[in-house]
Length: 247
Image (cartoon, rainbow, N blue to C red; front, side, top):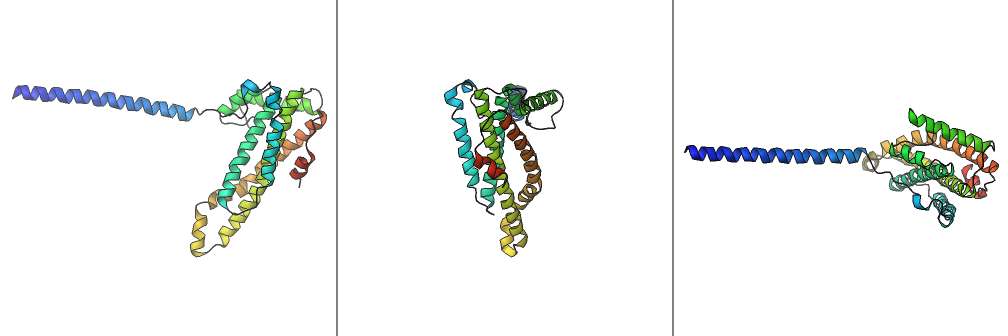
């Protein structure tokens, strides 16, 4: 009897050890998952290995113009799926523009650093060591505006492409704003069972109507500065791009 009890106790102890090992492994996996979640991979549009390759960067203006043409074709609609899809495109185009302008200013590494922190290089709200990067950016833009510095031919291509991508984002956002207003108005007037289809998306659409004008205002100030730089740096911006911006 005592032998059976000892065997049983031994079995229980082994099970406890196995359970502890299992819990430890689960804990380690969980920590690793949290680490990966907290440290997301930075997704970049440009290929670092090709930045100095003329065959590579000379294709970028055409790509940016294709994005711009797509933005012009966005319909004014109350279809929220279309609104949301285009909002994601506008954000992506704005980020590409920021990346290209950073390359044109010789600030590729700074862009990657800021992007890894989930911030924007063009933001005026950077703090700490990032504020120094922001000050450097502002100084470089000012030098270009006043013709104290000159962009190389390849830098001009990146700047032009970034300009057009930002213009694309702005044009798309203007349509998104009008579409969101249309969606919100339809939601307000919907009654009975028709109102149910608006319930899930109305908070998001309302936030777009409230917040997007502020973003557009900031982007228009930025693009106005870029227009000044383009003039001093002899960068030709397609007329239909600038005309669409100020309609």
